[in-house]
Image 1: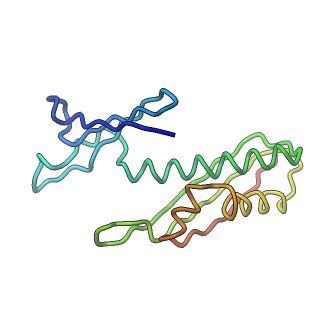
Image 2 (image 1 turned 90 degrees about the horizontal axis):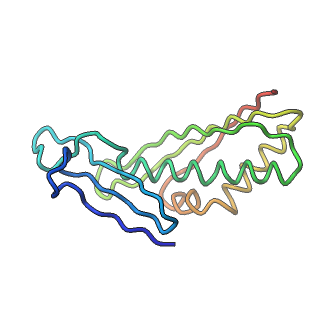
Image 3 (image 1 turned 30 degrees about the vertical axis):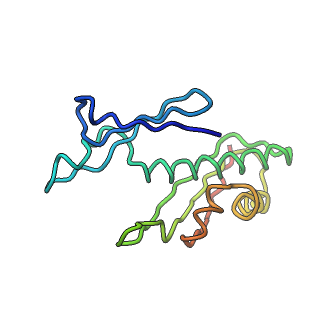
Length: 149
């Protein structure tokens, strides 16, 4: 896996702290720093997600992917899955994640709650590389709701 991240702020763009990531799979992701009222030249313009927001979003994508795949492999009729992540970060540098809560909403027909609970646990404990890495600094908790559709 590879990725190239390029600063765009020096090219006369709207944000002094904009970045473009080009992934090895050929996709592009933009990021921007938070605005800095005290030193605008050091801050972003709120034009794209912050880099740490993309870390959190990637973790959500990683674990949701696992949950859907595990449920499908179990031949469950899964029709939707979303995960809402809330987090806290350390007050001082490095401002690592210290707490992350993942709330899953799984939609389907006749899916037992135990299957969803098992899929989330398997992702959290074995498969989701992102959440396992973040679990080194953050206490990660999960919850879920199951919607019959």
